[in-house]
Length: 138
Image 1 (cartoon, rainbow, N blue to C red):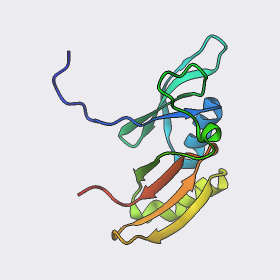
Image 2: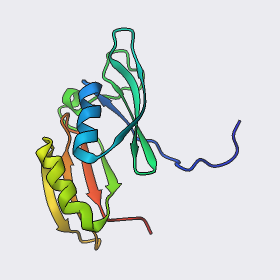
Image 3: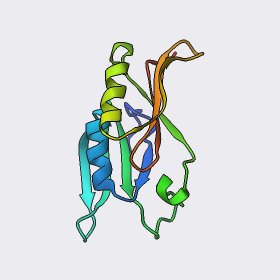
């Protein structure tokens, strides 16, 4: 057992109908990097970890045997959460342009938020909602 706190305490875990396309999209649109993946017997991605700066997000394939009730927004016809990722203020406009060029749906373009940070919000190819913000914590 490890008693030392990990560098990262929360690991978002998302489901995708097509995780292979999701990995390609998240890498191209948002600059995430594939860290690890495992494949099912049929060659499809069962589980993957993508590096987002110094952190990781997990993703897995949509399947009917999911005991946790987790689903892609394509199956839910909407989503139940949104993720917020830090991007340097000076890089937000270029980040949004790259995401839009890769096919992200811009839901709220780069703007100054009421919280005093710059940010934009988009949806990925399956409808997961992502906010990219200069918010770096308190």
